[in-house]
Picture 1: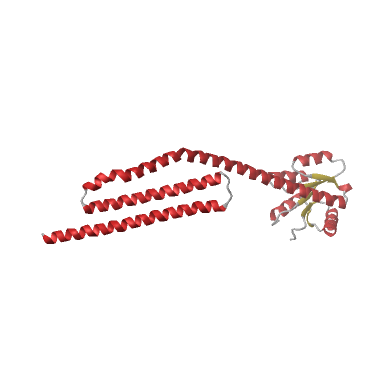
Picture 2: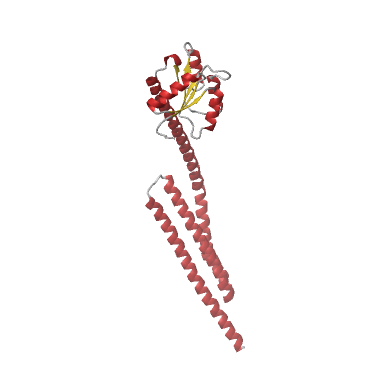
Length: 276
């Protein structure tokens, strides 16, 4: 189907009128028009249409199921396809009722003028598209408001826990630096090296966690401040990666030193035993 032309559904039980009107709309204005000769047939067309209809032209007086009945069904199905009612003379009350059920406009069948109907169809479609775009815009604004509220709450939580986290890291750093000194001095050389390696591993993990959390906090502050410059994010990433790399290299060096020291102690102990 050519999406440059509108796809109409014409619902009217007067076959001759419907066929002639559909032919004029197709030949003169290029509309793709599907004709249904009853409301029930229209329901089948609506249900089976792959891409839906752009506008529905709906007759009011039909046997079994009237145009108002079809409008009510569409309302229940949440089908928002714009409808133009085709009414008879003296059916102004019907037109008003149809508008309450969601019809966009109406026109009297005995006064149908093809050029005017063409203008009405295009205008109805444009109004519908405007409503759709406005609804999407409102939904977007609502989502942005919810995201902003969620971001504000996250910021409050982070601001509340950040001092506690910083204090915990500072406490760990001080304890790792001072408390083990006396304990290490009382241990034999071999146990001292083993415990020192464990403490160095703990210290590395603490530094890794501290770096990662600082990086995450920086990223969050950047996003909260609505910065859009990518290089700021790249700077934070580079700082985190460099810091973690330095921590890893420092720990690796410490492990090498510890390993050498352990081997030296083992060798010296072996020589001592040999002398004995």
